[in-house]
Length: 303
Image (cartoon, rainbow, N blue to C red; front, side):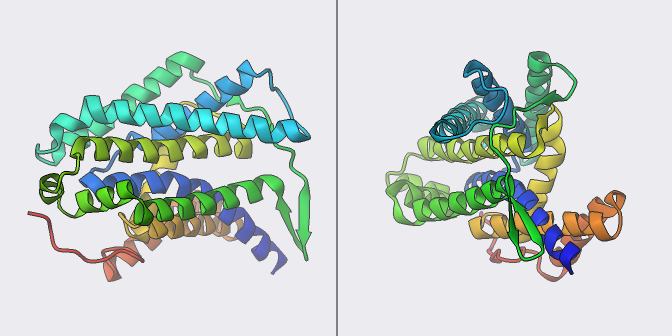
């Protein structure tokens, strides 16, 4: 039982990273029904931006005291800003002209943008994995027989806080209402005076900014980064969004934590080689009995 509880904690922390990435996936899909395969690489770009900021600040190891909060907040803010701008640029250059094109065209374009970002990062920092400074000290707290590291708490708390803030933003602000209106009926929203281009661009900004935050957290959690990390993480995060109900923010969060739990428990009790098999088997079973996902709603197709 002790091992099981410990793996639950490990799974929740791993799932928190997936959940942060999945929030961006589900936001973009909810607005324009696009599977943005470049989103996983924007997340990896967030680790590279975070690493660049830490390098400029001269940080190479643990930071203690008040300086720690300042460095963490500054690094996350810069990574979110730069990733958000990257998302806006991608939407403007690659996706905007394809909104009314057959669905295969933007899908192929998204895959192409993924390859472009991967090659840019490979050219920037090289093809090999690189170390990420362990900025955040990692004291462990004991909850009975279970050990919880400070980094694990950081991941879980950040993911939950981001989801709550995003929910409040979507349902309690004018821009959030514009996003929901655009998701329901783009043409009707435009007739009501909503600037569709601005709304969609801001959706990409927010979704990509969340990926930037996940990039910093991932670098601190794993202690390294690699230009190709976005492929696997993006695939798992997209799976989490579909499992929870793509287009649903709480569903993306739930899906992320479930994927992390399944992966962690499978690795411990079966084998690391079987973790992906079990994850996608669970996804298939859920979609067979509930095609809209765990928290998704069955809606009629948009005409």
